[in-house]
Length: 293
Image (cartoon, rainbow, N blue to C red):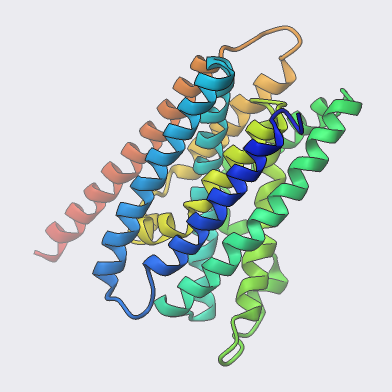
């Protein structure tokens, strides 16, 4: 056993990741129209969701329902927080004036780098928790701070450091954009990894659920790119989500929250925030139309 799973599971998972990354990079590109790319991205995103659900079901069958649900909860949290990451990508691409074709390449490099960064963070986080129990409090307080930043009204855009905003787009080079994408993903990993560690301490569950969520980040960006500006209240929901996860981590010694309850809370928060955001956006659009008339 290595990190909660046999070496064959680790090898098999990484082989699947390599195949999925290659397929993802080939499906969409500048040589197709925006509508075609969006349809393909939507189909691929749904396919990845189904594959992730099947993987969770397989873990539940092989290692028990508890671990299967932990994987599903970790995947849900990471996917939810990744949507906030997409806001930052959108701001970066607009700020650098990157067209859709170059966005595909920048995101492909970004996803590859994110996999390496998250792997390192997870190894460090799990090791610290195994040797120093008090680190739990540090992670919990870090999540509370992140929740407070979001609930006080700060959006994901504010995580972009000033030096990145001042970078000038390099002619024909994506290097500054890729570096900015990797740096902002590093900042988000500081919040998202402790959040998943609050759900499970099993390295295989934490790592694979994180990587599975990141695999769909590129296609999810093109699916949601037209809706990101309308999801104005999402950061409040993510703040509540991080606060809940922080409470789960800090109170673990006294209160055990069932994983099914955690999944219900995560789903409920995201559904309410998305619905309120879209309803508010539709009302504003309706008001604008009436004023013009």
